[in-house]
Amino acid sequence: MAEPVIASRTPIAVEVEEGKTYWWCTCGKSAKQPFCDGSHKGSEFTPLRHDATRTGTAWFCGCKHSKNAPLCDGSHKALP
Image 1 (tube, helix red, strand yellow):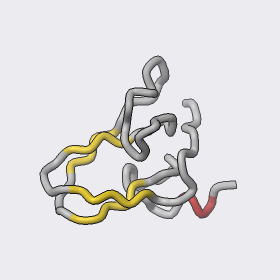
Image 2 (cartoon, one colour):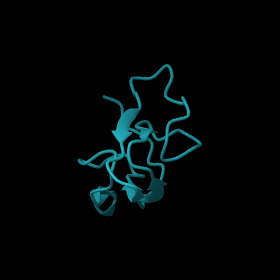
Image 3 (cartoon, helix red, strand yellow):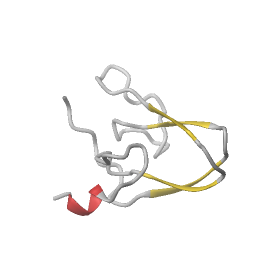
């Protein structure tokens, strides 16, 4: 599998609304980070659906290496 582009070495805070669906960018190429803008087309990457379970701040992974995708798990701290 191809490696995603590291879009950010820090998590990205987003105000989300309960019940709303968000499409997280998995390739790292989107200009609308942390969300998909279709930049993955023609690659093996596809966006990841995230259904917000509460309204408030969600910390989305910017490095694209989280084991808890699409949310940050601190994986960016271990990147070279």
